[in-house]
Length: 193
Image 1 (spheres, helix red, strand yellow):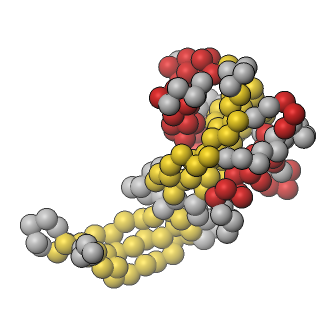
Image 2 (cartoon, rainbow, N blue to C red; image 1 turned 120 degrees about the vertical axis):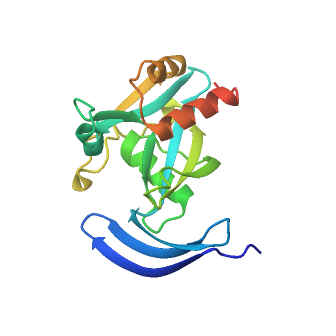
């Protein structure tokens, strides 16, 4: 078992408004054997799950478009982002979470999902682990229009797009969401579509 080189000295809650922003002071043993005290902020929003629905017959995928304030603040002129269906776990297991989110956001009821990997998306500042899934869909699985939950302030547009078009959308900057790019590239690398 690897020896831990970190000891937490102090944790302060800076904000607990939407999610939790903590300032953590810790000691870390460097490679040269010296110990150094550091302080960092970490944003804890919980873990999440993301899924890419794909159809092997039509060679299409289901994506969503919705307003994302942080992108608007950082130069996205209308704040709208095209992305794969995703949500926070909220104390559910990743598979149950993503099935529920898929139905709420896209209107498709899926029963079989395949976990492909998990990843830290912004490990320098955010604690979240994101669980990545893919699943096949068909027209028969569509049970409602999707769009998200009104009580959660969601206003989601559901997009059914040609897979090759989505790859071009990455190249031309129309798709800028990292999790979505990772999932689309996975389908290409594994020759799924």
